[in-house]
Length: 91
Length: 227
Image (cartoon, rainbow over all chains, first blue to last red):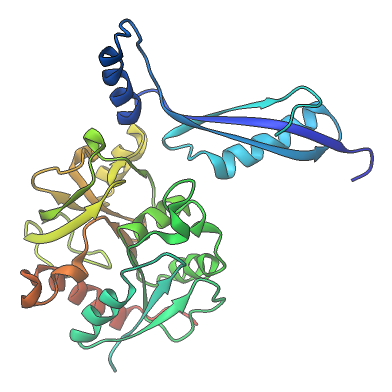
């Protein structure tokens, strides 16, 4: 790809609002045992990092969004958040 | 001639021989179809059996969807061929977009391994053709991600079009509307979490699964898709 460079990308995948997150709920219920009260809205998800070649930051975001939407997240139950990390960040 | 059933084998599938034995016991012939296969010529129906295709990495079915055989399954289904996804096979079919919805983790984050009672809701799908609506069948489940979900529009569509094929009498996993199995708009692709092949012999404690598999063989006999 001409004029392309590496971009580091992070994709966070969480269950959609309204989809039961039993893992998050279980973690939340465990916290009082540590004496940690007042922690709410715990959500468990997945985080992915990768490098990709792109011509610009917006190109990197667009390409990473395709990866997120078509593979990393199942849109029926999950939503994803794509972040292009600052230059020099190791994936 | 006895219908010939293709049983799709992904790396990590583990119910393929159960499925083969169950349909052969009912008079069909059956062969494995490797996940790298690029043709399903000569088969009258395809079964995607249970297991952990591609290790269930990322999500159950998420990687299996990219196996070459899934293009074959999609064209076979588009030509009207009967395709049944059992357990992990159901998860693969939803990830591949051949069936709507998704299978999320069970209610209460519980792995469930037990016999369930299913109610047959439709009598004209590839897996229930000729089975009286209301028939109750005792068939085991064995899964962690079997909690069927879909958005409200999809659920309304499934209800309106009579595409909820099987319901749990006593919901074991939190599935929306007690759904145990659904079918495609063409009614030839059916996915279900319970394992009919594990209830297909008196030795297994129930033969109720054979009711569904017999229906599949009847369908396969009639619907021979273009090669």
